[in-house]
Length: 228
Image (cartoon, rainbow, N blue to C red; front, side):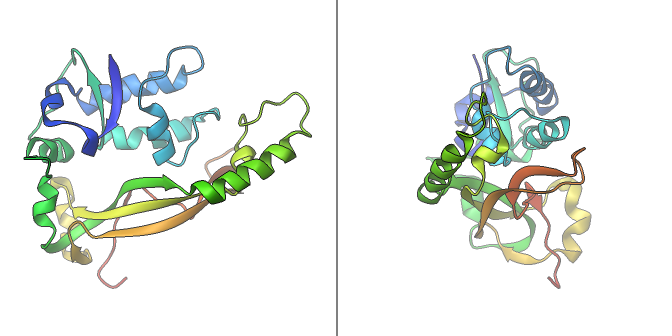
């Protein structure tokens, strides 16, 4: 069995079954490209939702690459019964945190009173159910005029739905330490929330010049400078 899961949902005893991110990216990419013809990986829908994408909408190449970034960083892990190359627990930061877990606590919790340079990392994405349900209903009524089209087959069916993105301040990775001197200083584990709305807006990466996506756009990782 293969399944995708966010690092904080991985149990310590499952780490031996986590595939190396390099090979995970290849497997997930193939699944996303062929998802209408093969069985979808367990957890893919949650991954797409966190990346601001919806599983019922056909993905462009750029959108697939966006979904693969958290897999490449090890933030989202692919669990397999027999991984080709198990993840290196010393090399990958999120795997290291999982491996340092004890009695249900995470290593990052021990840093909750420590201040330091870092970056904002998406920790949770929560759909605002009441407001989004009203938007879905309005979109459903509108879609009835589109003869022959299945509801939820287009980005406009999700128009004006909202969600709350929670970002957490985490330490810089070993390859990012050069940025430490210019980084803002916050308490590790500090959280902030941003509300996004799903709209059709300008998109320089899309051939048409626009696309349906959540605004304001939030990167999976955001750096903050001292003077910001």
